[in-house]
Length: 180
Image 1 (cartoon, rainbow, N blue to C red):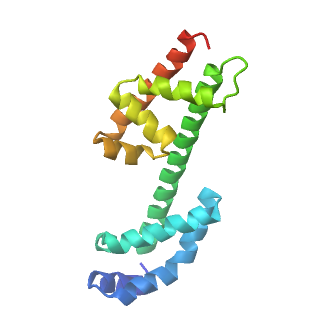
Image 2: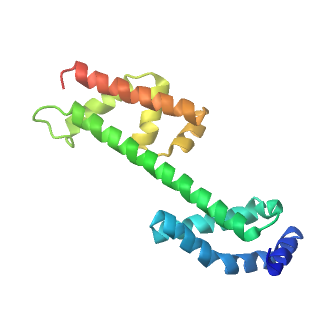
Image 3: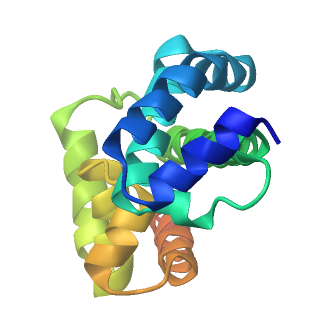
């Protein structure tokens, strides 16, 4: 381990704010470059690394630094990038599923952006059980993330996904049964 990193970690654990600044100045740019390499988006990479540094200080992650700090920082940012990419993929799959639902449920001669179309979709959602209805409304109408919506409903993320999936299925079946 780099001698200066060892001292930096020791100073962090002693509560030295200047050590945190030095850590940021030393590793911010290399971590951003590493995150950019994975995310292919400069703004997202910078935001992710910034959030990571905030977590280091706010959640006192520096207390867990044992051994090679450089490796810990790069691995942590890599893991956060992979988690971010997984979330983005899931969100895209949900958008695709909703688009497919719209395509499947499209009425002949009825523009999908028309007020009647949206009224029918909202009416079908309103007729659902509370959990399914809430899940669909939070994700597709309010634009909330899964975890945020699950927390608001007071259920686990997996239970939330189940309610959302079942709600989409009911919505799809409702439009198919009406001959759309």
